[in-house]
Image 1 (spheres, rainbow, N blue to C red):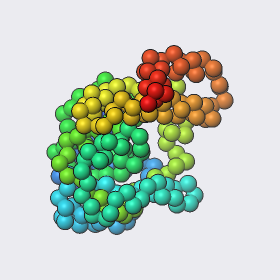
Image 2 (tube, helix red, strand yellow; image 1 turned 90 degrees about the horizontal axis):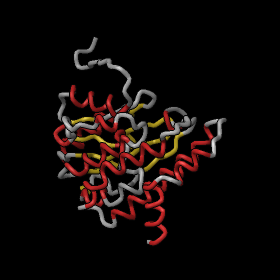
Image 3 (tube, one colour; image 1 turned 135 degrees about the vertical axis):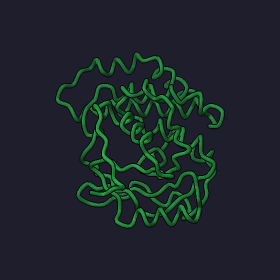
Image 4 (cartoon, one colour; image 1 turned 60 degrees about the vertical axis):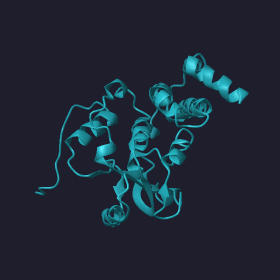
Length: 239
């Protein structure tokens, strides 16, 4: 019906694989994502088009609103409106905040997306793929702009974060280890920030038990016995 809309089907191999395939099939200068259960504002595309014309930035960050029957800001006023930001500022916080990690919280040039980068070893990880791809988008970019407008609306009551998954911690851990060396040369106190990320992932796994009726103490033991958890605990404790 619309010659500018294309639908592609493939075997379910997870969100990371779907997004990477979408990137390969894309042809536009800029890329943005919208998950199936979320939405964008009616004026989002016109606002972003104007911002692109004015800044020509490689990445444009914008605000996200949470929807759970009511509207709650997820984040807002991160910087001054239309402000250009040094990527080192973003990368120095990326381990320890969610503000910059969401693939749905930014629009970026296709040319910096590492279209042909092979992430297949990470396809098995159901969590942390936003962080994984965002790291390399920020590493590859030369300019970052901020639009202080609510562009994206995220539905809190749906999605994977509301279901128990025993691989929650290991997914975040494996992705953290994947990007660690690439961040090491640009992030101040990279070891400490990595450790905070790992410990937050462990806490997240424990908090996920509220979504299951089958509590197994062995799941705690797996985290406690994990080499990277204990290494991170020691680094954080001694910092």
